[in-house]
Length: 578
Image 1 (cartoon, one colour):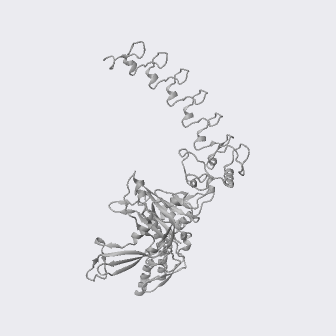
Image 2: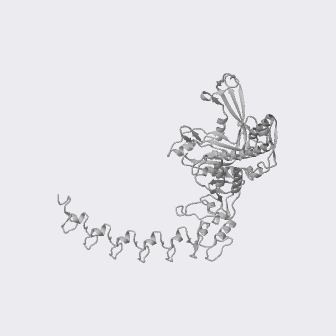
Image 3: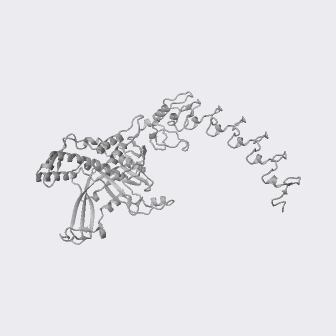
């Protein structure tokens, strides 16, 4: 046993001699060559190894661990680490010269011709997919020499000849680009490469917005509002000095003239400037995005503690805050006119004048502002008491409509895709049907019936409530209620199919008699929320006047197909009356 368990073992050669433990456990091993000599541990554990060639020489550790490697050519010379790790690489041509890192990583590329000249990055971002090794016949502008063809010449020639152009990863139509490995050249939207020649051919029709720290909710809502045509040159359309406004109150209607020196509010000015900047298409090498921080700062000053820095927010809430702020600043101008009309009444006027003054101030909040004219509508609400059958009617104004989203169990990965596929039978019309259906008021939601109640006793009755559209706005903004607040805030990710054209006649109390107030609407923008409540992201899809769809993802603006825009987890929908 001492010979085969921790002891000597039979020699693997014909000598018949035994090897000691030092010879096979951490010791010498038979030489792999015919010399018969043994290798020391330094020769096979972190030491020298037999040479890979017939020279018989050994390589040192510096030659096979982080050191030189056998040359890939027949010269037999070794490459240093600088030549194969972040350094020079063998030239791709027969010249045998090496390329420096600037030549193969973000730098020059081998010329697509036999001239051997290098192309700069600006030259291969717009070069054709096929490598041009010789002039093509029938293409205007080609030459018969072997010199490299200028990219702009090739592109123009391709356009003139009707040859197809490659499409980049950003799906920009008609944009020539070079298809390369995505790992070596990460795909980027063409409109981000403002210095690239392809940006000159197809600039985006509007600008993107800089994300200044978890502000995608702000950018997406603002992009949707910017596509409302009535908001262009907004300050010219808001109440100006000298314009008279009729304020209706119970006592009498008062004609209020907006006094001179009344300036537009801060939010209105910043909002108008931002809308103008977004709608101005960049030209040439102009920046294709800008920082909307001035408007965001004005919103934060008006609604303190509502949108803290570097915190995620809700796009619907932000949109409502912007619209409400512009609307209230318009009302403040009217109230300034009322105060100027009744100057001194509050301190020295008689009782009737004071009553008229206070009534006019209250009535100013009911004035139909420009924001109301564009996105404002009216909802007819009727509550029917089940005890006495008394009907209580109420007209309520709205700037947007919040529609319920059907609850559906969303399975987690890997069943998520299947659950999405099975939930595609829900439509926007079903959400409207649920919104306008009878709602039973019972339990804690019982209705106070004025017909059943007396001065001494209030009667809570079971009732039914129904909502219908009373007055339709020029621009209809729909909010899909995906977030619900209970013990925790949860998100409903049920897919809702939304149409390009929407008819709301079925949800109206009565059809409008004015032919100009059609019940047909066309989709022109939507805001999508992807991800969960804590780790989500907002983007906007916009339809321009030429019927092209674009995706606005913060400062990136890329063209997309219509089918892509209609297959999103919509959160806000913008419809224009047609």
